[in-house]
Image (cartoon, rainbow, N blue to C red; front, side):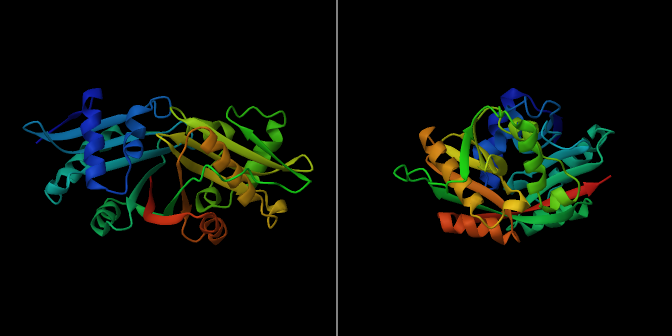
Length: 293
């Protein structure tokens, strides 16, 4: 077995290995780190081969949207070569390449992959949360939502807000996820960085002119991926999350999307209830894991 640096000519086979090994994973998800260098400028990618057969690969990078010191790593091994040491050897080869500035490695494992979860935990990763991905088809005949008189919905694709500081403050106060409570930062620049290579969709709800709720996502290959939905705690209970998501769906259809997906922490009953009300159906789960260094 030979482990070497991956090049652009390897990307198609690396993506194909991921989607064959993990049927939940789309080609867009598998290729994001490989093919969007604007978001992942420090990518390290290694492949394990034997007689020109791809056995597995590992990718590592710190996304421009991520908090300082955090680095994503993903190891994928072809199903036929599980248990042969390919993953271990890739992980060993990667270890000297981990930046000295990295304080936390992050990865994810699908919830129907108990063996992969056990391997990750053996390497030192611990489960942070279980996230559920849900999806639905978009109905092009659904009209735009009708907000109450004191609420306005502002659709944007360029993140240019005259009250940007107030929108940033609302975004910060709306975050109550486990990652946010652990100190992760999400701001408008980081949201925008996740959308390189795709069509942004973002809606801000204002109550009497005050930013109160936000939904942010992007369209790739006809699917809207909702990255974040949040409501300022002062304005919760008014149906604003539903309104911004309905408007985002309407905008996405206008931009050519035919479906939507979103991922939420399993215990987030509020947003998952809204998703169910809108027609989303659970597709799969994934454990998000961290390794503190």
